[in-house]
Length: 100
Image (cartoon, rainbow, N blue to C red):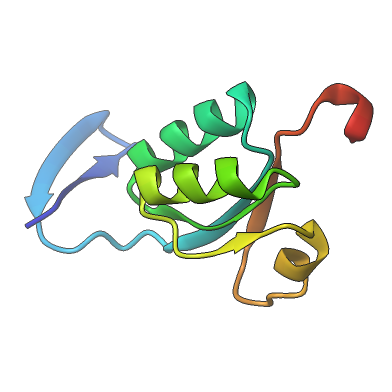
């Protein structure tokens, strides 16, 4: 069972309710599997309403290990394949600065 906060701005009160969250579930892809790719993936994992559904990296073996670690089902060696997927709502570009 999940909990979420129903905010009442007019009185400045917060109410904790049991039940399903009404927030949209977002699907995202992470491009890059270096330090920032890992940091972003861990942060996304903690959000609760965002799921990393794809990793894109030129280093296939590193991407597959990272995908296994974070339970990500899809690995691409070409980021453009992930961009073609209309079910992905957002991407995190976590490649080195010179590459984006």
